[in-house]
Image 1 (tube, rainbow, N blue to C red):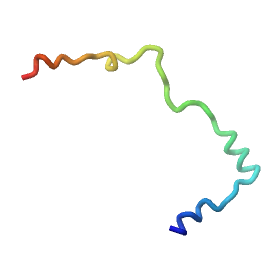
Image 2 (cartoon, rainbow, N blue to C red; image 1 turned 90 degrees about the vertical axis):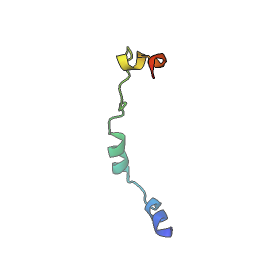
Image 3 (tube, rainbow, N blue to C red; image 1 turned 135 degrees about the vertical axis):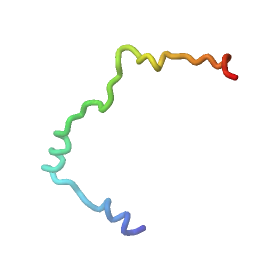
Image 4 (cartoon, rainbow, N blue to C red; image 1 turned 180 degrees about the vertical axis):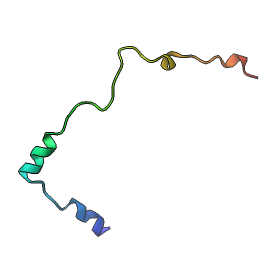
Length: 49
């Protein structure tokens, strides 16, 4: 357990922080204007046997 906590014992330099801050900050998903057809589909379970 103690060894696992050792991974948190580090600091980033100013240059490393600049590299992290330079990473793109855009969303990793796309929200479409219109929902896809499957999201609007309904199921009719009354005809199930």
